[in-house]
Length: 252
Image (cartoon, rainbow, N blue to C red; front, side, top):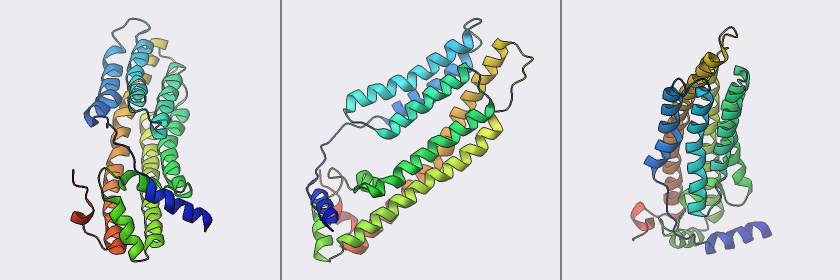
């Protein structure tokens, strides 16, 4: 009960500062479009070591952008950190032409880790969905909490938020399953009789194919799940705080 009371006090007093958000277009450009384009176009145009150089150049964009984003926002983003680790693992395995099974494991592990990270947040006192949606810059959080308190529904709403977080984590577990089947289809054994150069070119093509297709496989379910979770979350506010959209949206 003491921990729950402490969380409620923290929950009521937290007022996050307004921060700049990274452009979705920039995210898409540096994390997907440029890497895939460079892997496909440079692998055969930079001489004998072209596949290696193409891979390094392609990976430099999302890694560099993630570091820049972290420095600019002055905020540690564990999901972004997992993304950088994923990219470094992809580059290392491609350079050393790892077997397809290693790529399959890695591609499945990333969304699985995301899902477990989000699910684990329900035990931290601040579920992921609470951080994502209950934002002082978007909503009148004070009014929501006062209304919840007035109707003695704070505990019920806390459970509701945790359930929303569990639903959100399930979307990443679905992505992990889809990524597994996608990786099995894309990462096929490369003929050992081919030259080292040709093997590297084919490996880069497989990496580029997986990067572009898995991005959609992960994003589409996640976007759909986000809409469903938003609906579920706002339904909880309406049910427990008895407030409508106009009552809770922040006036700027």
